[in-house]
Length: 193
Image (cartoon, rainbow, N blue to C red; front, top):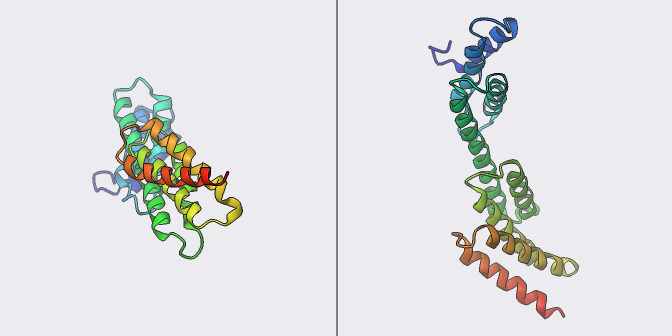
């Protein structure tokens, strides 16, 4: 099955092998190829990521059982690649929520929640800066469409997010836009006293 590039079926057979023969001669190899097969079958980030999650699960198990294996470094690299794929899927969702704006409800809040969860789940992602920027600009949009009672709190949120962004990315590629949001919010906070 593996040779025929039916990786899902191959992974299932590898899993059956190492669960049936946990001390078998080919158990290490079967554990590795169970995860590697799911990795090869992992789809585009815009699609359902079941195989990606299965690959991560299998490769993590492989690394727990065989941390000193010659394939351990490759498995670790694949894990990082798969996590970046999942982070990119979250990034696509935050972009979509932001672009939907106030269509059929408030999608800016969804953008903030999705980006914050992505930052927690993938703290070392190469998309971290864009997640932080999406939070900042969504909070800015939330303030623009806000009711009077919530305005001051939302302006303060923008200022807080700006400083969080500035702290991590003092020369970030979104700094110019972030500064505009900060200036807008900072003026509104001062004018309320």
